[in-house]
Amino acid sequence: MIVLVARYVTRPGMTDRVEAALREMITLSRQEEGCLRYEVNRSVERENEFLLYEVYRDEAALEAHRQAPHFRRIVEETIVPMLEQRERQFYRPVTP
Image (cartoon, rainbow, N blue to C red):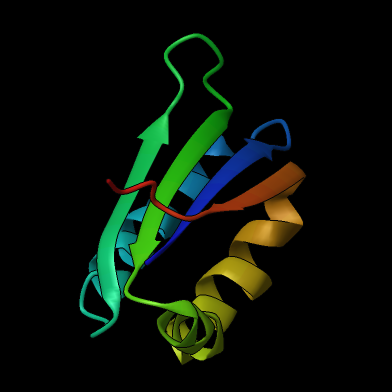
């Protein structure tokens, strides 16, 4: 498995539009075969900040997600231009 944690900070006035796009992304991403979990959280303390937690079966599933038409349309073309900051970190689960 591979875990992706992303943090998005929106430009002023764009937060609700980003949230609407992320809601669509949740629905479509959860339908992907290799997507095991796709969670989006909005900060309680900083309303223009989102935390995404994504789990994929393997790196091939993550790459399929990145190549999906809905990812390109929603994330790359719609969301990214409305962000001030975008951070991504990748993790692997620690198992006994």
